[in-house]
Length: 554
Image (cartoon, rainbow, N blue to C red; front, side, top):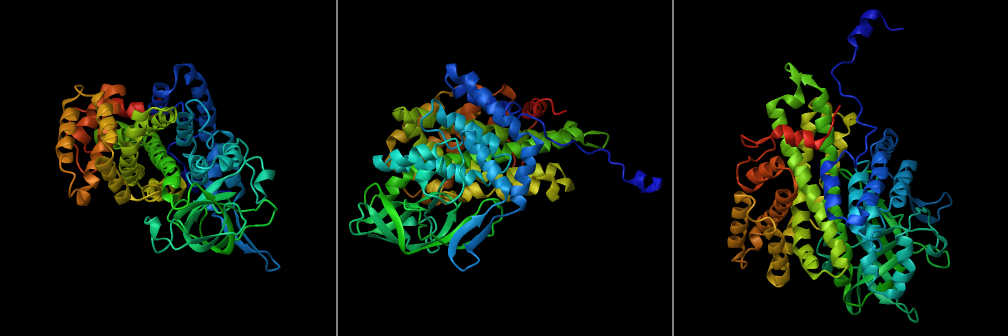
């Protein structure tokens, strides 16, 4: 038994309570408002109720512990069984399967055939991946595979119901025997990276195979290798083409899918990222036309880019919530940290970044729904807004999470706080599906080749014109810069960033409280903020912004 003196020295005071037992959707005012804003009136109540069910689980101690355990126990490769036969499997912690099962049940792979499906799925993805972000990778790829597979009606008719199923059915079996499937993809190769056309994987038609090909090659990054199917790029006789590669063939035999190793990554540790080889006996089916691989796969790329934006917004929201919660319960220098003017400036600045990211992610999700319904203007807007948003939101995520970690001081640097896990995860969305330069150059291509994209952007921004002089001035500056598109490649990041900021500013000016809109326009568009967080100018109502970030922190 401890002595009385020893016990006295271990009395714990001035530490925040556990941040569990909350509804991660109901607590997120910016997210709730964005969903209500974009959802059809007759669907708002039902969507909010659906998201609150997911939100209560996402805020529970049980599911948060599951996320921690899945991250702490990375997957392990099992290339051979004990007799020496190749099995090429990956073993995951049981909580990985629990997390995936809850996500699939919650509709996070089902968006394409529901009213407001992309909006409700994006909001659910935002809420749920706060628990653990790594399993968001197979969720995203499964969701995003649908538009690519629709290039072939017969393929889509078989696979789409399985991809959008609400049942998680793990294990390697023929797809026809399963209640639901997951998808992965293999695009990049070690010599090319984002330059997918430089890949060396080859596809040879199988005589009498009716669209079947034999693949030979090596994929440098292939995430979630225990998925049921993969979309891969390979050079066929007619050029770079898209193929569907099943892990298990219809007769029950395993396809030649050789897992060489799993990557040891900075973050995203619960998820398996692998190198795989196809040895000439690997069977795949052509999707779309030979030589049209990039055009076929572009729908998948677009959908996963939106998940990069949403995933980063989710990470920011989780980091902000932890920072506000900690400072609301921590006392220093004679009062609560959250009430100290400089700390409140930092928290308000973080809250602005989080709210702007969430508002833009939900706006783009709503644009997906409208574009799917035939709205050409929304489709044009996505063409330019999506790579711009992917550039800015994912890139600012890492410094934002790092600043939130610092709000906890030394406690934030300790693994048990959960903040290091968020910081390790933060860079992945900026890299995945094309890093910053790829996104910026894609914005430039849209400006140069698709006049409808710029017109849609200007129409969207015009809805907020006249409400803030700094916003109006920033639009004029952008138009001046865009007047000379020739030779812009070396400075393509700047217009990409400005477009994203203006889109965020437009949404906040129209829909956020005046304190939020004013602070954002002053600091992000008016040049009144500094290069680090916590440099909002005088006159900003930081108290209102912080209180909005986490209602009732007690």
